[in-house]
Amino acid sequence: MTIDWANFTPGTALAGGVLLGFAAVLLLVLNGRIAGISGVVGGLLQHGAAGDKAWRLAFVLGIVAAPLLYQTFAALPEISIEADWATLVVAGLLVGFGSRHGSGCTSGHGVCGLSRLSPRSLVATLSFMATGFATVYVVRHLLG
Image (tube, rainbow, N blue to C red):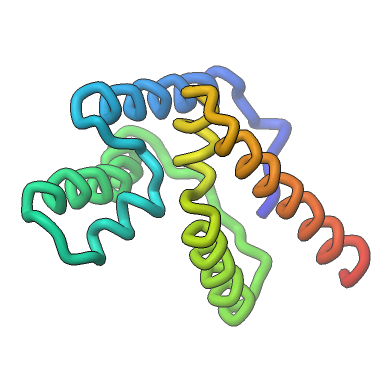
């Protein structure tokens, strides 16, 4: 995946960040829940109260519906993934394992936890980022 820096618009990136932050605040204030994707989806897959599953399903459906709604007004950006299916599957499993092992993902810790000044989320986010940086360096510069 590459970023088209010539067409990067900080305004839309800022608007997306504001919308994400607003949605996370609304979920916390109105529902008392953290907008961590791994926790939301994990709760859908566990046994629990129907009311608990309803908001989780609505949250996930909103994430899926948003780009579909967006494409009715504008073209979606072209996506180019430079990896084979095996690599994607292994990467997905590692991310899933890591988010369960770390008690959350980048959205839960990085967006919601850091905004609440959680020391645990700071350590988790720094670990996510350092691991990501190291992985890209190894794959692109040492192995590639």
